[in-house]
Image (cartoon, rainbow, N blue to C red; front, side, top):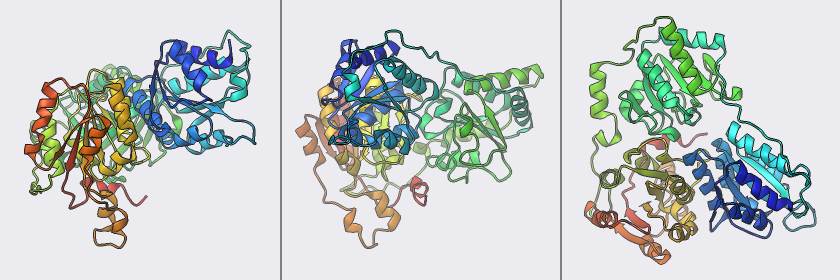
Amino acid sequence: MLVHEAIGDHLVDLGVRAVFGVVGSGNFHFTQAMVERGARFVAARHEGGAATMADAYARMSDEVAVLSLHQGCGYTNAMTGITEAAKSRTPLLVLTAEATAPTSNFFIDQAAMAVAVGAVTLRVRTPRTALEDIARAYSICRDQRRTVVVNVPIDVQDMALDCLKPRTFPAPGNPAPAPQALADFVLALQQASRPVFVVGRGGRTDGARAAIGALADQVGALVATSAVSRGMFNDHPWSIDVSGGFSSPLTAELVSGADLVVGFGCALNMWTMRHGRLIADDATVIQVDTDPAALGRVREIDLGVLGGATETAAAALGALRDLDDTARSGYRSPELRRRIAEGLRWTQVAYTDASTGDRIDPRTLSSALNDLLPAERVVSVDSGNFLGYASMYLDVPDEYGFCFTQAFQSVGLGLATAVGAALAQPGRLPVAACGDGGFLMGISELETVVRLGLPMLVIVYNDAQYGAEVHHFGAAAPGMANVRFPDSDLAAIARGYGCDALSVRSLADLAPVKDWLSAGPKRPLVIDAKIVSDEGAWWLQEAFGH
């Protein structure tokens, strides 16, 4: 067996089910080896799209996904997607061929590039170490939730394998909190009158929803999430949705009124805490995480607890019960329950519809689509001035119904994100929300959507401009011609790719969406929504100045 065959075989043995990429001469053989062993290969139209598809698939499946790349230019094409995955701590294994001869046109320092964007870098060193190198990379992805770039030199992958018994790396499991840290955490919980728990993506572990919810019930806490964990506590009566730039006015009021804020697997960064404005000056701040480097990394905290979200919440609840601590009402009250029921969600917040005869208000559009679409959906959102409308006006069923590849704030990832999310959650209607700029940046993957037969709804919030820049710098500022464009018939373009499509300027124009849904869609529907864009979205103030 040659090294490239063994690599593909071993990755499937380890549990890889999905591989994304663009095949070239350097990655042809190890990609085919994975396919022959039963992994699904998804051929993207651009390596950048493949990287984001793999990232989204890993997020929405909790599996290690593989990104397969050609050496040199194939690798560099994927770098934005790899950076997003690395910043998001996505368990993504990037398997890339590598040209090691400096005279090769494909030669670059691929390892240095991986380090520069925050990924872990490894190399398949020799035919004797090949399987151990792959197993180590897989274990880092799985156990540390890291993006790992594995360089496979072209000369090595064509050699005969020299080892048939690879070393194994058992999953270690999440740690329980140390006794003193647990005692300090329990004391803070006992002393709090208005506790709020905020759960990030690092808190999306087995049993965490139940364990954190039970602890919240014991101490009377409200439960919120960061954007990337949106939907995790949909079924909890004291959920206050997303903390941060997307917060509704009531959510922001409640988080900022807390005297104790506990982040479970949550960085408590500028997005989740509005540059710290959502944390009261006298509030106690506690962070629970499995990574010691994460504790206090982005802001000062009063207590860092090294431990898994499930393990820490369960241990704290057990300690409180051992102390005969009676369940307390804490932040909860009948009046607050009423306010949450009547005014927490953005769709419950009154606004003046700014629709004109020619363009539709994005809030009106999003609310109407939210009512039309089935509850079982997976929503993926690109970057742009529009993104808050899609993120907060479109409901999601749980934390596997919202895919938000925005740690790097790159425009153009939305369509590819939706492909990966759709493949990870095949029982749900995939919804891609893009601005016109991002849609056109990633439009090559619209062919992938059609080819895969995905019944995807693509909503293009089309204001014919890069709205974030227009509203940030001011519509009258010099240089606006650089970020404004002629209005395009995106529906016509989508039909050319093989999609169903329509232009929407009013609510009446959405009628075909009902017909598409009722017919059991077999191909994507692209909505070219001509939206009003007279002002910056409420979340926009968080996006600049850093």
